[in-house]
Length: 142
Image (cartoon, rainbow, N blue to C red):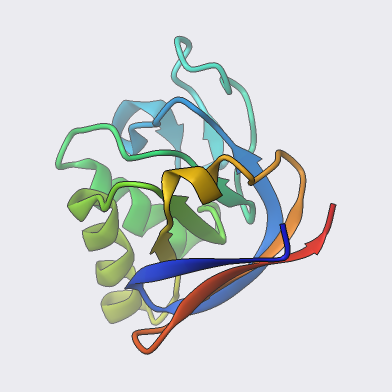
């Protein structure tokens, strides 16, 4: 993978290592804002610290309260640096928009094609560029 086309849900730019998951995470009840770790014992990434990572998962998973949890994590600096999805998620998107408006902190969110999503690898370093005029996921290294 060199560059993947994407569509911005929340604008911004971030670089980091991918945390690539096949299973969606609910930020409400599944994520600890104080540590940045996955606390959902049923999630395959239980215990993983996603602070500053590029979180790649197919979609969000429920609870409208997840938007406030994500916004608080962005404020505290324990949120992912960016989020890559295959299905737009209004709840996650609202959390990132609220954090930008209230705290002036960005967590870009993009949507890409599922075939391209499958090319993203755990631990790969990427740059997410989320712009209204054009967005991309660029490989930095493997």
